[in-house]
Image (cartoon, rainbow, N blue to C red):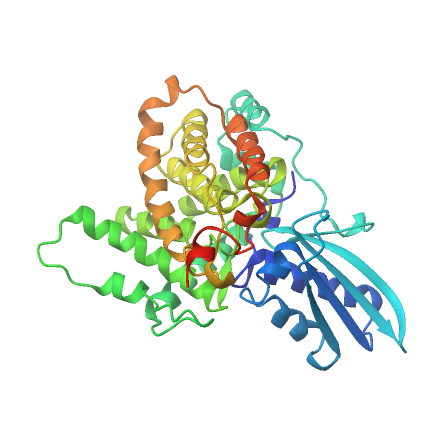
Length: 398
């Protein structure tokens, strides 16, 4: 498995696969080839189908140069190495200098065909949760300690930076108002949710409203192209910050305990990214919101100092009960149903831990099995429901 530092990334929304990944690819191409006179970038699959709504062409032109970059949307080619595929061509004096076939595999990560040296190296020796659990039990350590061992120096400083960025995103989102860009006329709702006064509101409803407002705040910042943290993606960036910030405030949790929860969540997200996918274009929204919920559940279980078995069960519940969740963003924008889903998943993450606390000794499904099932299910989902805006809500909405 790669480092957790490849999972949590600070960057601009609205999509880790459609903006952060292509931006990274363009910068690496320019770094390796020098500045070219002209660029032609062809987008295929989901990058082509929803690239306009996800601002893919905008970020590519900004990165390589507005006046010398042509972006082509090719919706015809179907035999692709990955649903998020792009071809970058650089020209010098009218002659092709180099071309890269790039796969934007989710969470801002990319793979360049024939360029293995660009891929980050593995830092973890284990590839399944069963192996990780065995290592932890043998050495009598927690999952966050497992991450600490293999991540090396600077890990906690890195997680602290990630947590500060998450909280800052929530605060910006809570202060903002108005309409999100893109033409859907979607109103920002985070501020209203947080400040809305309800007569005789009971504590449970108030808590739910607070969690939802935090999730909306991050997701709305993402939809507006603001700075967010992939957790594991931009489209699912609101789940973990909402849950952790709410619990920190309610229970007066020390900062270091939040960082341990982030590390625990990172192990789970890393595992799913390695053995399945965190790409909506590859496996539907179960690979984004479902994984975010699984990560958040694991982090909450760590905050409550639960066992490795209980953490596994909390994570597994989240994956199992998001199986088949489709990705059908209206107009290709990361707004409907994406923003609302962040709030729903945040609430579910908190509730799933209650089941894990009492029922982990009677469970039948392992986390590894749930992860494989999610991947297989994602491959079986029709392409219309994998971030192409050709099915579901996107098709029916007028």
